Length: 76
Image 1 (cartoon, one colour):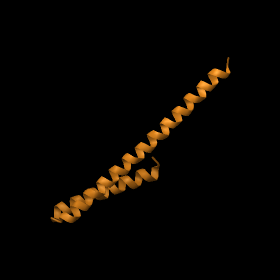
Image 2 (cartoon, rainbow, N blue to C red):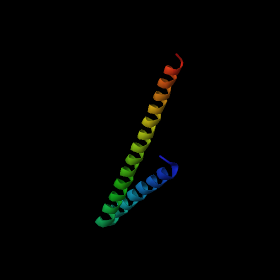
Image 3 (cartoon, rainbow, N blue to C red):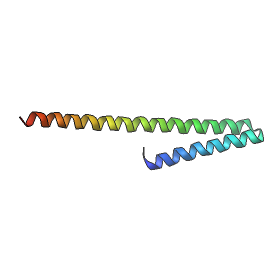
Image 4 (tube, helix red, strand yellow):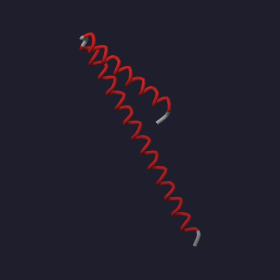
């Protein structure tokens, strides 16, 4: 996950929490729900970024394993 993505997701999550809190304090259910939605959106984006990172790691591991296998055959 890129640093910009992390910052944006954290900001969205914190702003969502602030909206939710402000909505609870003022009795504004619409603002409270909006804050909850912002937080949920940030969490979904974070999960998506983690999946992309994991896929990149798996891809790199497969490339490394293939290179080691190739080297094993060429050394004989």
